[in-house]
Length: 68
Image (cartoon, rainbow, N blue to C red; front, side, top):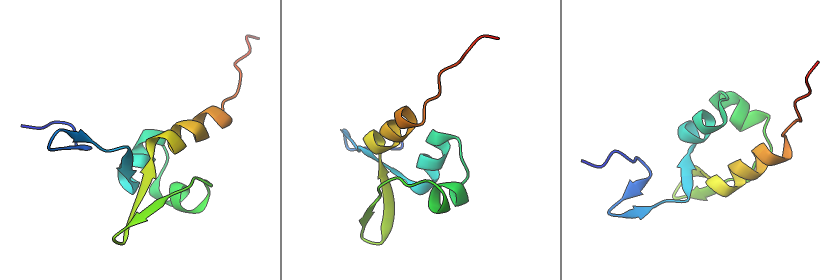
């Protein structure tokens, strides 16, 4: 049984569904849809997010941690 939801017939997809992208970023679907300016791909009416775009968003919004 295949446990990787993004993998189909041995091919790993570079894109995530909305729900999976929101989970990847630890945000709600509404935040992902309305507040985050992340490029998306629409294929056959289905919205997908490229993992590299999600990673790029995370790196751009990274804040340094300072010890008090």
